[in-house]
Image (tube, rainbow over all chains, first blue to last red; front, side, top):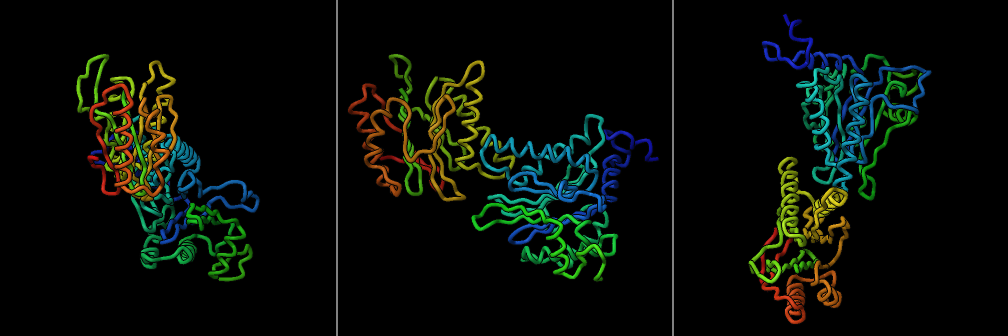
Length: 251
Length: 194
């Protein structure tokens, strides 16, 4: 019965659902996991890469974590090509704000701009929605460190810790158990790799399969974005006994 | 000719404008307020082409208000001045530019710093410790140069602005009527007398 109402984004079904939007979210649930954790002194984003191969030039391109502007980064789950369009849009929106006000865009406003665009694709134009969910991690002078999540419907919410992509439900319940409000960045990094190791399909973690980034303030109070190089991810994994080498020596 | 004055103190900004609205030889009104409050902590003083002035000032005021309602946060004086300057710069390259000169005075509640911006109709903007627009500048800037310092208290600022107003009354040819004097500090904007 649903078949009649799902081929166009711009119509409701009799039960009041937008099937195309729901199918977009279904597409994302098959994508690589990405999670974000808000700590008192920074934010962690960790993600599982789906495209892994020894032949892949790891240092050249990012698949999961991107810089949007000087104070906001994002993690992606879903169709990479769709994500690239949205990321470009967000980058332009951030610079447009900087052009007008000569200050960095507050994090929530950037999230809203993207979400307004995504919502447009569920209401008019006859085009399919974007098959991407984002986790935004950013800092501004108004509200400090913030973590947001948005999905293809254009809804967004602020979170202390959240997860998108495959196995996000089990990851979320693990996060719920172990997250505490006063968590530090160091503890958040540990929690991130631990949760990822439990929810990922593969048996051991290695830097080939992970993207890892942190956002915090440096000594002068400026926002510092650190995208971990493969060796740094390996070091972090070894620190918490979760693998970290290509040959599976441990666990 | 409209006279706009502004002085930054240690934790406040003081502004003064003349209140005379005249066209050619006739004085239409002696109680004109040549400013608009952009938000709780920012005052914008305007002078220039009649009509353009109020139109532009209210345009900026409405945009600042819209930003605050939409985003739930106050614009800083710096951001408001950059936005205003951008609008004037765009206007300059349009069919009929706005001919408005402004002083934007505000208190930044986040950094607890008072700020004053001098903006002219060509879209130049500069942050200043004290300044003026109009003929009044020729008489008052030297007085402000002599007596201003960064730790100015409100009482000292009142004395300083009175010196400027008295000088204009003595030496400026036009009868500038009264001056409207406002202060912006952490508690907001209020009108005062000197």
